[in-house]
Length: 345
Image (tube, rainbow, N blue to C red; front, side, top):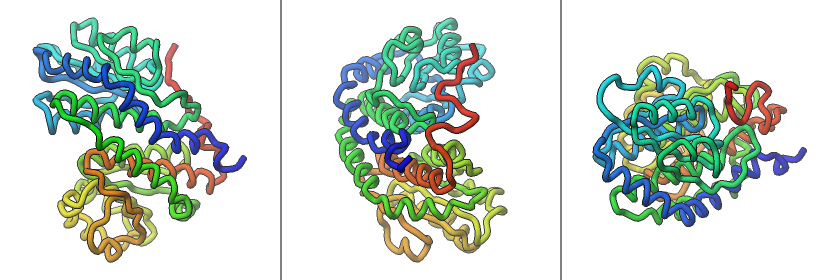
């Protein structure tokens, strides 16, 4: 099978167009959800998801907590029963591409039983989650067949930006610029293949992010685990200095995902410390001076703004994981121990 016949590749490439469709089609549903959140008497709650959808939950947590008067905590959906408050009222937002994940469905069902405002973001109309939740947003990625999620994560990120901006009464046209930037990343196939080929014999790697790109670092690590069978871990840049740095040497592949020049400058002291151990590392993000002096390789993306830079950055991550899978002789569409939807009954 040639590279471009795999579902993971085709679906990753479809991601930018899926974002554009979601921005166009989901405006009304987003406005309804934003109005519900603005008018909600409760201003605290949880965002839940599993796997890739949990990483989308972390991204929405970042946006809502930074820009609105809502305060939410992102937790794995399977942990909701253990974390739910025993007092007070709250809201719960659930992410699930299928709308059928048992852990997310159970979390929303339990939240509804306890009287919480419930909202779901899913890619599947008519799914269990859309029937359970009080409000729902159905993204427009189209069917995703690969077990390794790509375009459905893209639209979860887009929906998160749309919700946050709608609460604030602001536009989100920059999502379209970010989608175009992601398309241009796809066109850099030769560079992404070359980087992936260096992971052919790798047993372990680390992915670092900051702010908006921290959830993307976790997602990149998950894609490397799922598609490429590489042990990978994601960390915040400077958090990496608190222990994991001990594992770095000249043979360590390491990726740094940065969304803006300001984030790069705020991370620089940590990056220079890591550099002293001579890792074999790659920068993915917008251009900033002297990148070539610090990093082994650079994947430059357009400077579209820190919050939406996640779209071109995650596109590079998805495709590197895909090409690494091919280089290692694997089938990225069907990891041997995983299924598209985790259901317990």
